[in-house]
Amino acid sequence: MDVRDVVTTVFQDHRPSPIGVAARSAGEEGMVRVGVKSGKVGADRRIDTPPQKSDGFDRLGNPRPQMGGTERAGIAMPRKRLPRLAAVTAGNRPLTLLLRWQDGSEGVVDVSGIIGAFRVYAPLRDSSELFRQVRLGEHGTDIAWSDEIDMAADTLWRLAQEQSGATMTPDAFRHWREGRAYTLDQAARALGLSRRMIAYYEQGNRPIPRVVALATRGLDAP
Image (tube, rainbow, N blue to C red; front, side, top):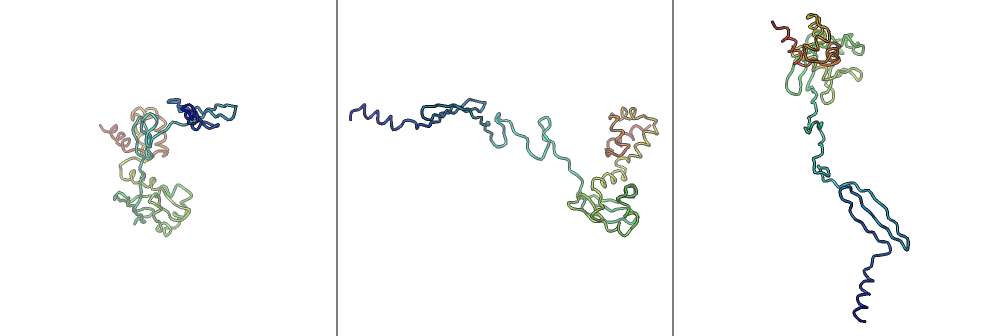
């Protein structure tokens, strides 16, 4: 066997198999071209492959938003923390509750207004014994008297803020507006709010922030 026979034999042993795959990268688009040859017939097909991403970053190297917050203007905003209760007992006065919050603060809240306004609380109006059976709900997010009667912790927190003078009740807010002879539009301009928000506050559809309550007092100051 001469040199030409050796070269021919080595070449034949290393030829591609009848079904060969030839791929080339198509750059940033993540496209791969695959050619499949079988016998005398050749067929090309295109396969879309997603761009590769490393953990925590997109394909351009920018960090992806993390869970547990809202991505806004490049800043991760923390989720709002809801008030949670640590303990609850019936107060000494009728339809009052002694509340202790998980931050250590405590106080007495009068819930007579809510209990008198909603039919679901009618059993509590009729039975002081049932009212004294109040208990803490799961995770401190509510209180309950039975499987059918409960009250949310954020409702109790709003009442506590209103009754402590930290903010205003819807009735007090409406009386303030009417006492100054403001229309809804005039009250909105005076407080720098929308007319719709003023209406929400008066109807009790939105809790009145402390800063708004303080603004009403500032406008009343001589």
